[in-house]
Image 1: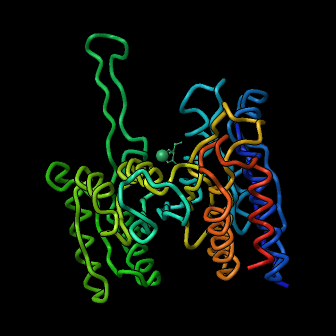
Image 2: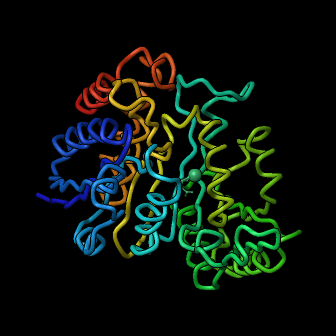
Length: 354
Ligand code: IPM
Ligand code: MN
């Protein structure tokens, strides 16, 4: 029997609650599809940081590297200053594990309320390929004369040919395998960011020559936020830089019905990848059994697809669609008509029925 070693980081806030439901569904998938998951839990997060003063202990990254994938709940704690855990855990893992792709599907599931008038599941089904190790997130820059009237703050966007090209190539390959519209849109800002997005644009059209079967398209980032609302059906796969990808995927999450169902994968195609719900730790709902676990469950499905268990991953998605179309009143925390654990239980039940 195939077996996979998974590092599980439940993390902060509602992270542990949604991960528990994700694990329930992953176990149902492994029972049905005949593989084994060895889960290894790590307590990284805000509580550990408050106790020990370190975000990630020495050797943590090497330890995580021994696994086939990482399953992450959420990072973010109300008693820890913003930036410490994000940079010290989440971004550090993305960078040190060289997870250079952040893959974020935006799909409206049946039965889910969409805030866009006259749009249904047939209109909203695209994937954002966000570069995940460079751009404004690289941390380049600095500050001079801090706290004085002459203060200077510089924050630079780093774009390397290698980093841009590997991301764009991944997006073309992904678009080809997805076999939907076979259309890849570059999202940039070539009219203003004439250094960074000139590199992106040239690389995009060069690589495009190797993919004559893929239609290529370009949109400025400001315009794309408009098209997401007006014509989301135009999109199949979108490739963009780290910062723009961060911003447009929150908008994407809203048009697919909210953070309750938005999942993502931090992917190193040659290394260890990490899958997470993208909604954050939602500390005000912690321990109340009301948070929506579907995003974490979908992230688990993405992880199985990545591990090569495509049938199992797709079955998780189908089970989620059964639950959204036949059961949930809403995707919002506290308004689902079911508790967190009940929603996990429903999805797990469908895993053996469909
Ligand atoms: C995300 C989050 C992170 C990001 C934060 C928590 C650092 O917003 O995964 O989109 O900006 O990438
Ligand atoms: Mn974000």
